[in-house]
Amino acid sequence: MEQKMRGIVIRTVKYGDNKIIVDLLTREHGRTSVVSRCAGRGGGRRLQRQIFQPLSILEVTVSGQHASRLPEVKEALPAEVYGSLPYDGVKMSVAFFIAEFLTYATRSQQTDAQLYDFVEQSLLWFDATDKGAANFHLMFMMQLSMFLGFHPDTDDYADGCLFDLREGRFCMQAPVHPDFLHPDEASRVSLLMRMRPHNLHLFRMSRHERNRAADIILRFYRIHVPQFGEMRSLAVLREL
Image (cartoon, rainbow, N blue to C red; front, top):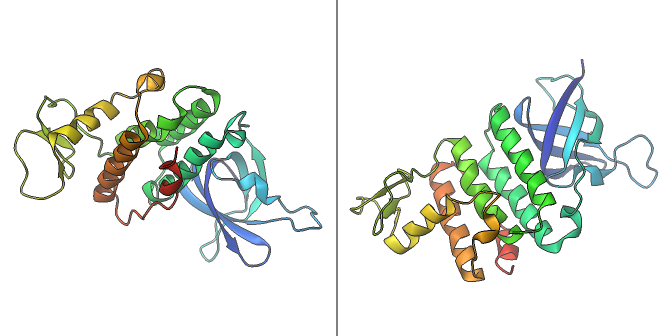
C-alpha cells in the first residue's frame, strides 16, 4: 500500500552505494525518515539526488510502512519551487542553518499540522522577501518555540528584569541556578519576540549583535530540547 505525504527535507544521509536516507518534516506524519534510490550516471528511473536538497518542499509517495525497514520513495515531486533561495548567497547560508536547526529541534516531533504550516509558510516568505534576510533565522527560532511549547513569556517584562532560561520567564531576582540572562541580554529576548515577517526589516543589528542573539536562542533550545547538538553551520552565519 502506498502513502502520499507533503514534506520538507531536513537532511539526507548516504546509505549504501545508490541510496540515501531522507529525513522529512511532514504535515501528515510529523518527523519521519524514508529511503530513496538515487540515479547514478545512467539515470534510469531512479530519482535525482538534487530533488532532496535541504528545505525542499516535496510531494512524496512512499511504499507502505514495514516494521523492519524504512518506507521507500516511489515518487518525489516539488510541491513548491523557490524563486530566490537557491541563488542568493545570504539566503543559502541561512537555509543550511535552518535545516540543521530543524534536525535537532524537531527530532521527536509528532504530527502537528500547525507547526508544519508555520515552517513551510515561513520558508516561502523567506524565499519571496528582499528585506531582513540576515535576521530571518532569529525570528524563525523564536517563533518556532511557540509550537514546541516552551516559548518565552513576555507578559512580565520590565526594564531591569532578568530572564530565567529554564522557566522561560522574566523575573526581578536571580534564580538559584545559573541558567539566566542579566538585564542587558534579557532585553534582547523581549526584542526578539516582537519580530514578525512584516517588521523584520526594521530590526537593525550589527554582526556582533546578531551572533550574540543566535547564541542566546540556541542556549535556550539546548535547555529545553534533549540532545540538541552543536550547530556546525553557525560558523558560516557568523560571517554574514
